Image (tube, rainbow, N blue to C red; front, side, top):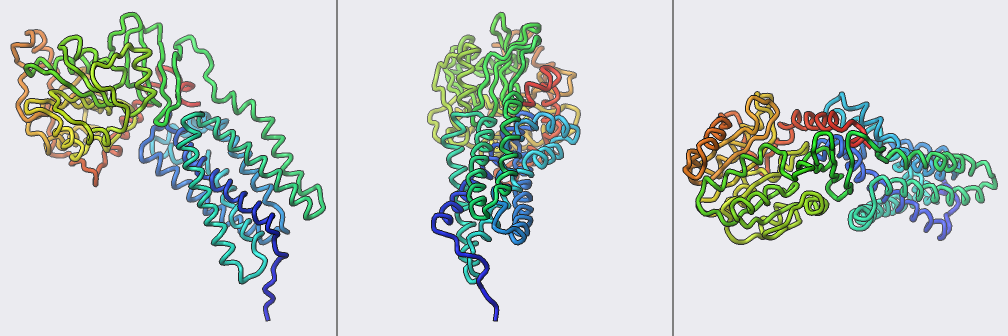
Length: 519
């Protein structure tokens, strides 16, 4: 006969403490996973590749943690949980300190390889240790073999519940108030406190101070490293540029940067430049906006416009000052919207909407003579905003003579088929299409697609002869037969724009140095 008694039953107070431990470890897993995107995004963006890398690394880490933790639990004498959590705390605390060298070391592997390797190096160790908590807790909470199912089910349910709490608390409360580095540091400190509390319990059970020493040593080592961890996230003063404004929003690191030597003020979000102006005059320094600024002359009596993707707000100002057009603006990031007002002189003339474009577009009413769709200038692509479904929603907001202007950054020499794909997708919704290149004879460029139901004639009497010639020189014919149609169901735009994302990252790093975007 098999004796089903494996250990002494755990006390109700001990069981409660064990469940609290599992809740905290489950919450920590999600905090680390979600904040991982915020640490990697300024360098690699927020594309599907970054999310796929983080999710994959998390699954691998938990798999290893469950396997190794189970073996450790079977060989340990009801001790070791404090050491596991202390190791998780220490490794979590090291993440902000390691972020900069790891990102720089993985840059040569490209967007996909670099994002995965950086996630693997930065997050697998701490997540693996946290994954070891659940099997260890199952072993400690199981007193009889016939209770294994109930114990394991309870532990995994509570761990998952902790993950839910961690996700909600981070997204709804912590992240809007604190930076990702500060939250990670706080998570490490909470785990250190938890490890000491468990260590005291283990010491009491085994009547040995030695069980507590490894955890105490890790706590001391972690606290000794803490000043270096905090300092690692600070930007040192730089003679080449001056950061006027910096805020980590829900959508990225938003900065306003002055480059006095070039008379340039930039608005950036992560590794994307979304606005540029002269420091002295405040005039826009983005050449594609010169083309967009002539669009109202191609259609008579434009009165109302919508800009999707505010940037620094220059286009809204030009449309209102030059043509008297009332402009509604739609921007997802409140930090960007505020920076446009505070540092670039943006003053709304219509509704200034802050929210997600797909949601807000569905709730807009009225007709627009011009819609400027300007969300594709940075390193990461909001691919869901350039599908047939989105374009049909925008078409429904246009007047019969209205024009949709899409600004899109890509290569001109055929390194990718992104231009063909955008053109072919627009053709599914709009029968007429004209494309301009911002700077002729330059490979990496802004392309402005004008889509409408009526032909666009650049030889228009409302344009000066020199303006007509200037536009004529920038006409860019596109053969879109090799493109694909972007839909909500099938959208490979991020894949087509990998080269563009890498080009953008290196362009900004060359301008400002690695420190500003790798912290």
